[in-house]
Image 1: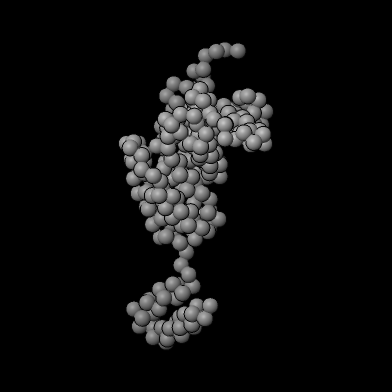
Image 2 (image 1 turned 135 degrees about the horizontal axis):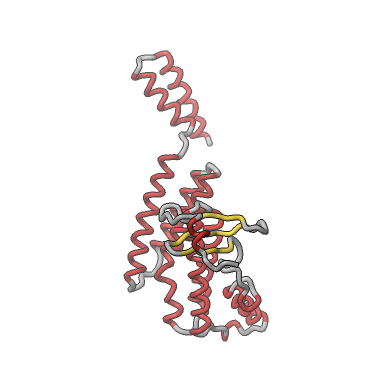
Length: 253
């Protein structure tokens, strides 16, 4: 095999605006590929991003969660703790999932983005609860607003694709409330991400609201305005009767 990657790289020129793709390998397996200025990264779409099985588990997090489960069964949860080296192992793995969901977000693969952000939030909760050192318990919290935001945006997009604007708005509002309720941390990263996330979620809520299909009543009101403007008074009278009927039905509910 020729070790020179140049022919392969030349077949996919680097374009910062179009540098992520899902490729199908010779064995039919799909992978996520990212074109870098001088190379290519490849991620498994499912399971651990690098395709490895640390500790013979799907992920390091799964391995330590299994250990926690064993401790609970033995009645020893109170003594279960993650030492600094174990936390570093978990932190490094979390970065792999972060890079994957960042690229999945670019591809608008909303379901997988939701899956990976939920997974990293689970990691955040696990470390915060069981890390032995206080600095390890707090380390990931500076990025919690960001992960909550990306998770909410992706989940809202799933709802929008299902034409469920009400659910999309509910998801965005719930995430904004959760971020606003986070205890303050004296970290510039945390405060920046919280502020930026609140602004982004507010903008998304406005966009969802604007794209929300008009109700029957709203459509009739628009038609009434047009009828009155064009002096079609008979049509306007019919529309007023229909609007009164709908409003009366709403009051009786």
